[in-house]
Amino acid sequence: MSALTTSPVPSSPSAASFHKLALVIDGLRSESLEKRVSSACLIGDISLGLGPERTRDELLPFLSDSIDDDDLVLLKLSESIPDITEKHLGGVEYLHLLLQPLELLLTVEEASVRAAAIEATSKIMDKLGTAGTADHIAPMLTRLATQEWFTARISASLILPLLIPSTDEPNLPPLLKLFTDLCNDDTPMVRRHASKSLGAVLEGLVKGSGADVLSKDSPLHATILPLFTTLSCDDQDSVRLQTTFNCINLTETLTKTQPAGPALDAVIQQRILPLLKSCITDRSWRVRWTVASNFGSLTNFSLTSEYVSLLSDSESEVRIAALSQLVGVCSEANKDAVLEAIGKVRDDPVDGVRGELAGAITGIAEVFGKEGTTEGLLPIMLALLRDEDSEVRLRLISGLGKLNAVVGLSLLSQSLLPAVMDLAEDGKWRVRLAIIHEVPRLATTLGVSFFQEKFCTLCLTWLSDDCASIRAAAAENLRELTKLFGKEWCMERIMPYIHELRTNESYLRRLTCLHAVTKISLSLEADTVASEMLPMAVGMAADKVPNIRFNVAKSLSTMSDLCGSDTTNKSIIPVLDSLMEDADVDVKYFARKSKDQALKVVEAS
Image (tube, rainbow, N blue to C red; front, top):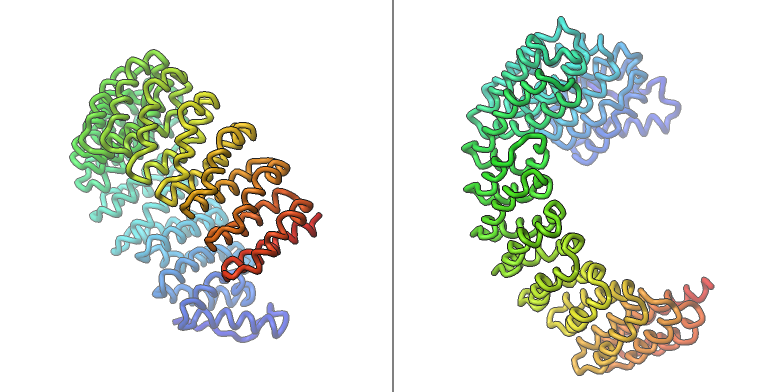
């Protein structure tokens, strides 16, 4: 291994700075992984301390000899090498020396290290300029692309697109020949990464060739499209699934940069579209899933029948992926075909498929309009609301706000809200919890009058639920509703029930009452809190259950912030003083803690 000493250097201004530098350098050679990682992050500082000559002659060779280290150290080295600037090396003419350790880092097995090394190479390439890239990066790329170990060739396939824009036309054929070899590599992983780079290579060619990219003798027709066709027929599905992304990337690049006309249409319709359609019928479900998951990005193509076929695919994962794109795919032009297809999906035997449909169907109501939604979508929604799986029903209910904007409140209340009421009393507590979380949104949609008639009693009933999570969520729910409907509504509709809970025989119900009072206070003005909510909390300070009493102390801490200094001093601190004398240690602790907070409120005034 190359020697990296810690002898003094002219750039070290003092013994203290030299000592610090020596510790960092020693860290690179330490047996401790933590120290090596820490020193690897400071490569730029080390090079500055060593000076240009020793950086070139000692540090960079040392880094090149350290490639067998732990992956975490190598990752930090890859990220830190660009911190060694031309100033640290003695001039821009020495920048290419940084490629020596980077070339070795580009061959390691860990993908994250290679990715960081590629990023570092890109930064150095920007500093080298066109001439420096041709003199140093291009030869390194050739060496990587012809190495025996496949990881080097993977790095080459990802670096190559970076060179395309700055490569002049005479030097372009060898570079494209190198890319062709990578696309035809014996190792599937190399071919897969080369396929990923196909779009980036085309972008580079467009930057260099401009409008000429569509000519018959251009690299697009001579190299890119033939490679695209070959990779789309690869025997490995991991390579073929890149076809979808290449279709999207190639089409976007060409339509954005090339003039509309027969030449462009011919490339898209005759060379790209057939390969995309082949992916939709591919023998591998992973390839079909990739197309289905990205169908929203394929709306420039006329693929309604192909989308419908994905909705009836033999694999449920593909059907779910296709339904996830329903909102982006459905349009005025294809809504009839889509409606017919989703009408069949509603009876799918897989719960996840029906659930995905339930989550997406309300999003397309705007396309169908009020009449189309009532006649076409509503029967499907009603069937989903009667689904045996509660998660399916819940996902549909989550989108009722979108539906209300299209069909109106009257139709919504007649057809769909009864199912919401059923779910609110579902035997699964997680379903009930999800409904509680939807209540504020429903309240905004329905308005105070309709909500009062249909849901108010239900919201209060949740406060007595057997599940603690439901009771806690119900208390938070009342805070949101009070904020939405106001003080008068709360005092008239909510507080009478809260008063009843305060004297309930079950201490859990009394505790829920206290939590609800505290939460509701957050949505009320100070005078209302002081006159209505604070007396209820203070009245529970003498409860026989210690759990209630220390929660009263916690509640009073919250109310002191809301009520202000006068009320805190007169009504809250005396109660806390009394609780501090309680026989229970937990009550004493929380009372003391709350009093400290109350005193801060008083002092702040």
